[in-house]
Image 1: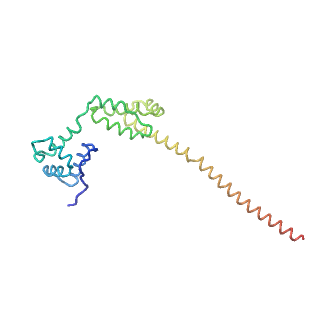
Image 2: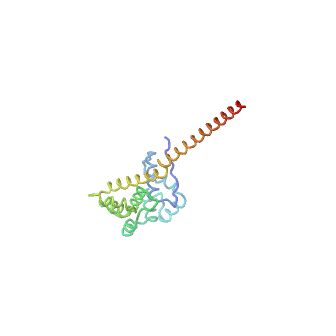
Image 3: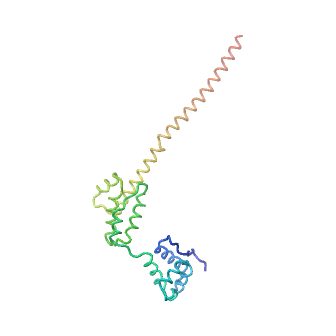
Length: 215
C-alpha cells in the first residue's frame, strides 16, 4: 500500500494543535486505524525534544503505556494552557484592520482570535460588529452602517465588493484609458512625422531635377 504524505517531527515554532490535526489527517489518508500503532508512530516521529518532554511529564510512567489522546493532551496542557477568556475577548475587540490588509485577511485574523472567546451562538454577530468597527475605511463603514438588518455574511459581501471596486478603479487610473490614449497620440504623431519627412525629401529631389533641366 502506498504511503501518502509525510509526518514530520514537531517544530517548536509550530502550533501544537495544528501539528496534531496534521497527524490525524496523515493517519486517515493512510488508513491507520489501530490506536497502539498511531501512538507508536507518533512517538517515533515527534522528535527527541518532544519525546523527552513527554517522558519527563509522565515519569515514572512510560510513554508507551499511554494512549495517543493522553499523550497529545499532555503536551497541549503543558505548551498551550487555556488562555483567559477575558484577555482573548479583549484582543478580539481591540483588533482593527491594518493598512495593507485585505478584508478577507482581516476576517481570518478575527476568526483566529475567537478560538478561546467562547462566543457560541453570538459568534457571527460579534464578527459583524468587529468588521464594521475595525474596517478602517470611512467609505465602507458608512455603507455598512446604512444597511438595514445587517448580517455578518452581508457585511462581508459588501466590504469585499467595495474593496475590489476601489482597487479596480485605482488600476484604471494608474494605467487605464488615459495612458492608452496618450500612447495612441504619440504613435500617430511619430507616424505623421515620418511620412512628412519622406514627402519633404521627395519634394527636394523633384526641385533639384527641374533645376538641372533648366540649365
